[in-house]
Structures are given as structure tokens and as C-alpha cells.
Image (cartoon, rainbow, N blue to C red):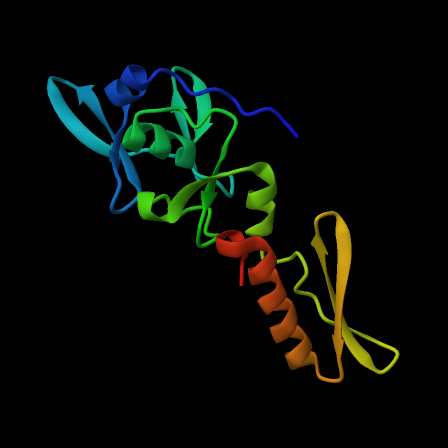
Length: 158
């Protein structure tokens, strides 16, 4: 697992960035010729919104957590509940372990393939592969989604 970059101190971030927790938008105040001007802040070159503070880039959802709760999430992952990496509303963010965050992806265990006249899907449970198979692709999909919800709880992407 790659290490997570520590965030700058809260007072440094607050001096540069404003965060609206209801909309997930970030702004900063830039003094220009004696007047203050509000501008949207954040690069759109990556799938995650990134903000620059003191010449270093940080992912916006981690800064949102810091600004709203007043603490760096440290080694925890800030997970986007709805899977939309650009949706930084605080109601869409939660702390998760790296493993829980991988459960909140659409890809794991939801692929249904045909094998020897049966429709099959797989999912991992405690390191072991669990197989679901039926005669109907839709039923196989429904069963794997149910199993995924049972195994991963609130972190299951459905």
C-alpha cells in the first residue's frame, strides 16, 4: 500500500482555502490591486480534484475532511460514498481502510460470465473466492450483489 501524503496544518489550509461542505466547492481569496476576488480553486487534470497549497498538490477530498472535522485523516482513506471522485460534499465522504475503499468500486465481483451453460460471478470473502452460478445472467447478478452487500456492508458498491 502506498503511503498517504500528510496534509499541511489546519491553520495553513484555512488561510488559503474556503470549503463549502454542502456543495463540496473550494474557493480562495486572492488579493488583487487592493480588492478581494473569489475564485474557484482546483485542477481538473486528474480524476480527483487537486488543490495546490504552498506549491504542493493535495487531493481535495482529504482537505475537505481536514477543513470540516479539523483533523488530518492520517493513514485512513477518505472514501467517496457514491463513487464520484469529483463529489466532495462532506455528506458524501467517510473514512475507510484501504480494503474498505476497494470494496466501494463497481468492478469487484459484479462481472457475470457464461461458463458451461451456467452464468457465473465471483467475489472474495476473507481471502477466499466465492462463486455464484445460475441459469440466468440477471439472477446471477442479483445474487452476487446481495452477497457483496452481506460481505462488505455499507462499503459495498451496488
